[in-house]
Image (cartoon, each protein chain N blue to C red):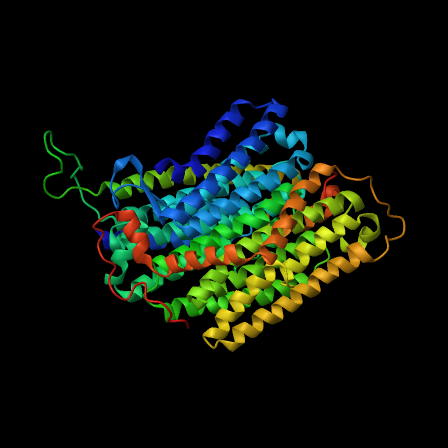
Length: 508
Length: 125
């Protein structure tokens, strides 16, 4: 059992080591990397099934009992995130087989992706705040290299912005950890959940806001998102798509984890800030997207806009809102990454990402057009696709607590998202090809495999949404009751969570 | 002892942030170095300072006797130093590459340098 909880981290790390040893043996690396990612998917699925049947699983490293050792905890949210990471990793690995050039492969593309996966899964599973910092750094350094791999000028210029802002965020994160340790004397998250209610509420809230800024940069929320559209469009599409789907969501996960488990003493203050941040993130993201003409930049700004919905789900802090946030995370990761992958195929056909220079895709590639429509309408929230249910849950949660303005903003932003998607559709698919441009030969069929798979998932989650909604409900129930997390970490005879923690509601 | 060190951390933080706001990216890296150093001192101080009390458990016992130095911040700082070292080295190499390819490390000139360069449009696939 304990092996299962650490397997999503150990497996990619071992594969990374093996892939490093096999440097230069391209074919072998490709087979191994794809195989390792597929194995990760199996492990993640088994982990979620175990969490489903047995509740929260916890592992203490080296047999040191909590809070002295490092703990790994797999609750519903963590297991769901690990599973979706594996799904996206497999999709981008298949796409990368035809998208990543041999030079990047020779320079270590495959091992880097595995290190990135280990970092992401570690961040999802760890139950220790400093350990979370370490996993964040593991995934950051891997993402730095993946982003700049190839040394194109645009990559370097975008990379500088990405690296500098993310390093600043890491420093703030570490500062917050230091201050929290000085206050409580512990870094184990379950132990912190017990210790924090006894501390001075003002100091705790100050540190909470520092965490909010640090994770806010990583999650790309308003007004800290500017690094994302400056860098995400520069690497090859297989890398862009995975980053677009997963990386900001690790920041969102960290926000959800800390602001449901640790910083719930002054919900009226912290979660009100989060609500404003979420609302402004939605609006600024979608409005800036409308002004872009590069498909990848439009999609990058939409990442930001969609993050707003998840933050709003967290900020409303009710069971329905958190379930909505979890549903939104999953739906958005799939739809967003797929739109990037589709843009990559469209670029192979038309030779550009620039909407002013492309067109005629509907006539030339009707199948690709259908795939684009599924993901784009899914993103905008048109029934019966997955985005509809995600938006419905968040909006319902807002209406439930009579927060009319945020519900209105969420619906309005959905409309503007539809506008952006129809803009891409209009220019790239419907309008005739511009003078002088010509369509390239048909791209490899292998590129379509992950795209079809992800589009099918978007469709499936829309038509058969109940399983994911019930998963989201289970995750939300655990998040709103930290005593279950604490009990899992400390085992039998766990100290009781002080009253005031874990009470539901209290939405701002 | 904690109070003067707290002020030291404050001064280091301020200097680091000041340097990070400069246009020259090399100064940004120096600022990052200062900042990462000051965070380490902060964590160390947060674990409370003690002098000359090594946390060594005498033979035959399970726990140290009396007050000893807190070993956990030391372990945390050690990890943070190693991570910080790796990140700074990567950033320096990235800067070197940027200087080689774009010919500048001034943030104001990066955009124009990129616009002038020929491979601004997406790479061939």
